[in-house]
Image 1 (cartoon, helix red, strand yellow):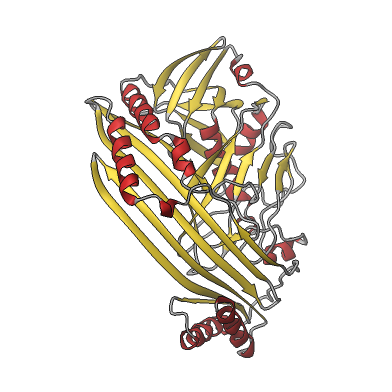
Image 2: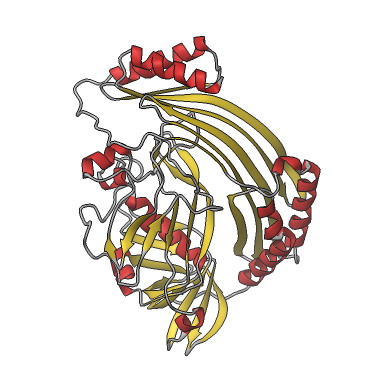
Length: 467
C-alpha cells in the first residue's frame, strides 16, 4: 500500500510535466519524559505520518500532506508542480547520476523503548533529578528521556526504492547552581541510533549526581585570567569545535554562498587542495558510523552514504554535497542531503563529523610548562564565514609543568580558525563521539540529529575569562 501511494504521487508528477520526482513516505512514533525541579513537567507520546513530494521543473517544487489518499495526493502534486513552474528564467538544475538502489535497512536495537512502561521512565527521571540536587546551592534541575522510531520509504522517478527504519534514543541531566551572584550550570547527555539500552548504559542517577557536584563546585570557583597560551581541549569541546568550524563550512551550499542570507558562508571556499591546518589535523564526515546519532545508509536523495575525508593531513580535501552541488563541482555525490521529516525539503547537512584520533596518549598532551585545560561545551559565537570564533567551556584548569589545578569558571577559547588549526601539535588517541540532537539550518528552520566528536587535542589560542 505504501509503495503504491508513493508510486502514484510520482506518476502524477511526471504526467504534470516534472523532469524528476521523489517521495519520502514516513511514519514515526516517539515519546518524551521531562522532569524539572523534582516535578514531572511532561510525559507525552506522539505519532505522525505523511508524505513529502519533491519535483523538478523550471526549479524545485515541494509539498507535503498527512492525508494519505489519492485525492489528497493529487492536491499535493498540484501544489508542488505549481511551485516548480513558478520560476521565471533560471539556471538549469543538473543532477549528478547516482546508483539506483532498492534496499531495506533496519537498525538493530537491544531494547525497544516502546516496550518500557512510561511509569518506569518517569521514575528514572525523578530519581536522576533528585540525585542532581546535591546541596542547597543547586537551584534548578532538569532530566529528560526521549526517543523516536521512524520508518521511511524513499522512491524516485529513476526507480529507487529504499526503506529505512531507525530508532533514535537520548537522555540528559542538567543542574544549575547559584552562589551569591554567580550562576553556573553543568549537564551530560547520551544519545544515538539504538534502543533503551543507551539510557541504561548512561546510568542516569550517577551522572546526575556528578553533574550536580560539578555545578556546585564551579559556582564557587575563581575566574580564569585572559592570556594567549597552550590549550588542551577535551572531547566534548572538540566535538563542538568540529561541528561549528569544520562541519558547517564543509556544506557545499555554504561554500557556494547560497546560505549566506541566513546560515552563513565558508571561509575555505575555493581552497580545496590547500593547507588549512597542521599535518596532524584529520577530519571526517561518515554517516555509516553505526550507533551514532547521524547514522544512515542512504541520504534523502537516495544517494549511498559514504565516508568523506574533509581534511587530510591538514589539507582541505572535499565538501559535503547534494546531487546538484556535486554536478557543479564536478565530483561524485557523497550523500549529505537530509530533511528533518517528510514535511521539509532536504538540505545539505553533516552526519557524523569528527576529528580523527592521533598517536598521543592523553597524559602526553599535558606535558607543557604552562597552559590551560578546557573541558565541556557551552555557548559558541562564530562569524558568518566560520573564521573567527569564541567558544565557552564549562570548566577550565591551569596546567603548570604537567600538573593540573582547578576548576576555574567561565573560560572561553578565542581564535581564528586557520591559526588555531595550524597550531595543533598533539592529537590524542582517546576518541569519543557526542550526540547533537538539535543541529539547526534552513528557512524554515530544520533541526536534525548529528554526531560530533574527536579526541583530546592541543594547540595555541587566546583564553578569555568571564567578565
